[in-house]
Image (cartoon, rainbow, N blue to C red; front, side, top):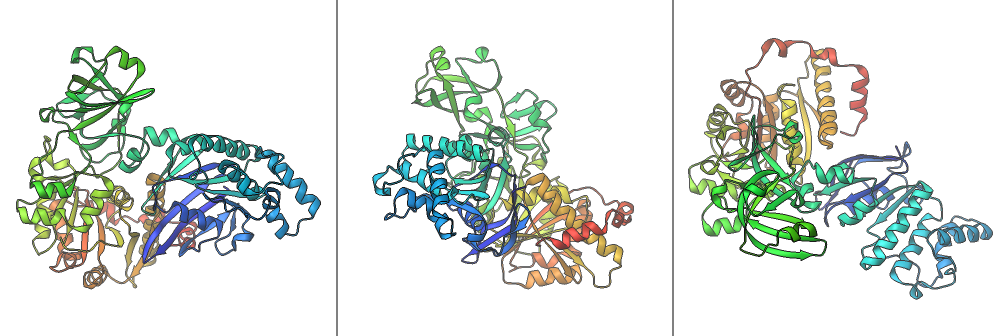
Length: 621
C-alpha cells in the first residue's frame, strides 16, 4: 500500500474531530474523501501532509512511519482551495519555488518548470503574474507547483471550490489526466459528490469525524451500509419494511424476493432504500410492470432538463412507514406521534414523461423496480412506556436526540408500530432512572426484543463508549450495534476486557484473543476501528468505578442467556449501572439464547497464538 492511516485521532476543544480513522490507500490510487463541512476530512488531509499533529495513532507512506516527521520531509504535494500563489512572483517562479528552496540548479529548475507547465496546459505563461490569470489557470499553476519536487503523494484540499462550473470540469479533467500519467497516489477532499464520482477510483465517506464507508462510487450509491451515505450520495426514499418468507413487505404489499433480502440484517424490521429513479409511476395498478407499492397523488412536478422530479403522497391506509425521523419540535407542539403520510420522490426520464404527462393532484400508482436493505440493526427506536411524561423526557434525552438526528431514524411509541410481530422491531428505549429499569429490560427481553437502550433522561451526551461482552456468541451482534452507534455519536469507543490479576495464563491469552478478534471483525465487517483495553481487576469493581464516575458514559453490553439468565447477570454483575442518579446509559445486545455452559467452559485459548498477541500489543490501542 502507499498510505496507511491507523487509528488516527485528533481532538479540538476536548472533542474528537477525527475519531479512530483507519484507512489504507493503494499506490497510484485516486482516493476521494467526501463529506459535509465539519466532518473531519480536511483535518485528516492536513494530518497526512504533516501540517497537523495527531493525538493518537500513526501514519505511514510506502511502509515508512511519518507520524512524527516534518511536513517538508514527507514528500507530499499540497494544493489548497484558494491557490496560495505568491502574488509578486511570476508563474514560472511560483512553479520553481519548491525546487529553489531545495537547492536545485537553475538549468534543472527551468527544465522541470517547462515540463510541468506543458503538463497542465500552460505553455507560454511562465512570465505572467498570477493576477493576470483566470481562477482556473491559477489553480493549474498551484498543481504544477505541488508536483515540482516529484512528491510521492499529491493532496488536494477542495481545489475546485472557488471556480465556476465549466472551469471546475475542465480543471478536474486536467488533474485526472496528470494523475494517471504520473501514476501518483492522490487524495482529494471535497463535499461535491459529482466531483467524487468523476475522479475517484475509490471514495471514503466521512461524518462526525468517523470514516463511515469506503468503496467504489457505484457500490456506495447502489448498496450503501448507512442511512447517511444513502442520503448523502443523491436522493433516496427510506421505508421501514418487514422481511419475511413471502418477501419484503412495505405497507400492505409484498415486493418480489431479491438479493437484498439475503443481507445480514437482525430482526424482521429493516430499512429499505429506494432510489427515485427506481420508482415506477403509472395511471393505474394494471399498467405497472413492477411490484406495487401504493396508489397516491402527485404533490409537485419539477422540470430538471433531462429528468423530471415528482413528489407523490401516499394515503395513510397504504400502511407504508417512513424510516426517516420526524421533527421533534413539531411533535412536541402537536402532541402526537402518529406516523405522518409518506411522500415518495420519483425521477422520470423524458420518455416516461411523454408516455404519461402528470400534473399536481393527479392520481398515480407507484411500483418498486429495485431496492436495497441496509445492514443495520437499528431500524427505529421504540419508546417502551405508557407514561406520557416519561416518554417525552426520553425523546428529549441528549443521547437519543443525537442518535435520531444523525441516523435520521424514527422514534415511535410502542403502540404505534403497525407491524404484526412487534418483538423484532427497532431498539427498545427504557428510562434508566430507578431500580425498576432491570425489570423493564427483562420484560422486554421476554417479549423477544434483542436491542435495548436504557437512558437516564437527563444524562449529558456521552463522550465515551465502553463495550463489554460476556461471550463470543454475543460478540457479532453486539459489534453490529456498536458500529451503528459509533457512526453517529461523537465519542471514543473502547472494547474492554476485565482480567483478574490472579487469572491463569489460559484466561489471559483468551482475553487478548477476544480483543484481537473483536477489533478485526469490526474492521472487516463494518469498516471501523476501535480501541482495546485490558482492565486488571474484577468485573464488579470495574462496574462500580464506572457507576461512581460523574462523566457521562455509554456502556454497551453484549450478553447471552435466556431472559431469566439475563436478569441474573444484570443484577449480579451490572446492578450499579442502573442505580438512581447514575451517569451511565446502557445499550444492550441480547442473544436471548440459553447459555451453553459446556461450550463456554471449553478452552478457547487454543485459538490463541503468540503472533496474534504481538499484533494486538503492537497496535495503538
